[in-house]
Image (cartoon, rainbow, N blue to C red; front, side, top):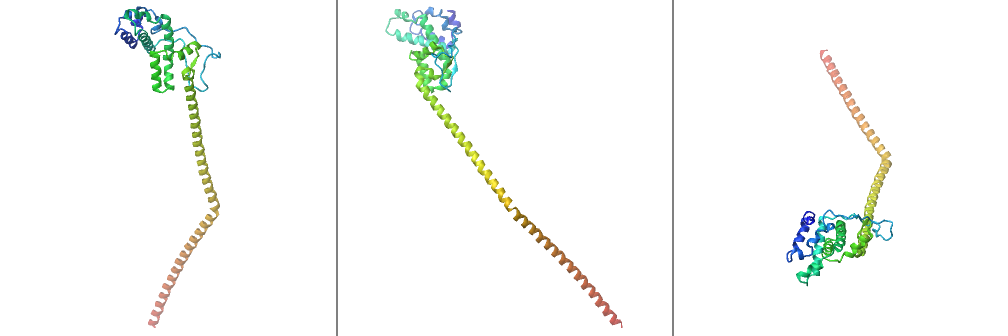
Length: 279
């Protein structure tokens, strides 16, 4: 009973309670003997090792296929324990549906059957996070429901348990091989298309830069070709300005000289007139 109370998660314990809704614990799918199955409780693990990667019989991921490492000690977790207890209850409900209460406990799973089931379910629970990244959510829910209530996915998981590959990928599930191959091809095709699109963007940017550089270089050539003409224009402008300046200065000088001559002539005329009057 210690295992039932100290090594059972809260959610898994709810499954145990659920099994006693319509029948006494002693006649249900678990009973007192179930508490002696230490491998079904939290903290349990296995002394297993992965197979050799060089063994041709061991499945392996496809080239470039996403994968994860498998811990073949298969430690029991809270979530795996819930699935295990749900599966035991579902099997018992199907197997004993038409039998009287007194006969039902005869159809409990044996210790060996529970242990085999435990290994498949703990393995599935360990792989589930990776499966969620490779499957649509509704397909993941379908898998989880089937593992929790039926043997439909047992062949997939048992094949992995038998070969014990060091890594897991979706193509290594017998029922998902074709789908995994298609997904991998689609992913690879998208990767190629994305790479081609990126290369096209790079090519366009390089061509745009080249055209801009060519235009700038052409402008520099035009400026170099126009330089002598611009120099001549500047020199001509300076010469015109210099001549205009000299003409203005000469005009001012002549006008000043003329004004001085006119002033002196007027003074001389006044002087002569004064001398004549005195005579």
